[in-house]
Length: 249
Image 1 (tube, rainbow, N blue to C red):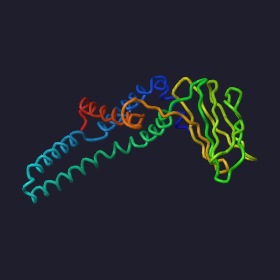
Image 2 (cartoon, rainbow, N blue to C red):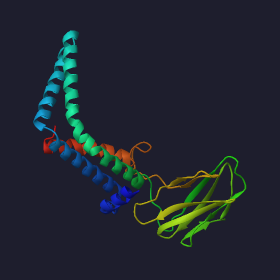
Image 3 (cartoon, rainbow, N blue to C red):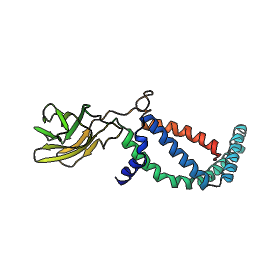
Image 4 (cartoon, rainbow, N blue to C red):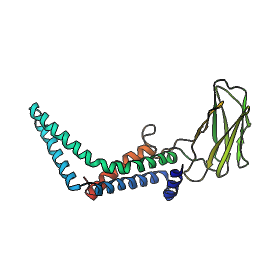
């Protein structure tokens, strides 16, 4: 995608950093952009007034717990204030929405998996339709070596090869009967990798490079601290700090 290549150029310095620092840097940059756009695209005096009034009505609701009628009236007013606040917040949200979605897509394609290092063993799995049988062949360029046989028997609808190779972008070819499908891989010292999966419409249904999942912080449960988990908690923290520093409401 053109935007993917563009973001690779824009964020090239970050790709030289350890993944944790790269994700934290992106989180800080995106949070700062959102706060700056919010500050200058909204009436901050009005936003401050609405927020203060909302806090006051929320306080009153707690005080009126024993007076349901008055509490309901205060709740209604708080909801109106909240809707008004959200309406004024909508403009900066719309302005930043598409760029943020594009950056999220790029991050998902950059920080979800570990890259393949030069001469590091990795595997490629190929999945076939349910009627496939016999053998399939994997053809690799001279820079990539296949460990074991190039011909593999299809078992339970799949075949798998182990490979290792030199740095660079390489094209593999899977051959089954009269059908051939290509799949690209990248071997690098950095953090980059190509799309791990390629879906096709023939007897060969899917070709998959088996990357290890990239854990940004080695704590937590499952992938909470992969790129997305790390981005979420850090962006919340950065947003809170930047709002206070820049006095954005």
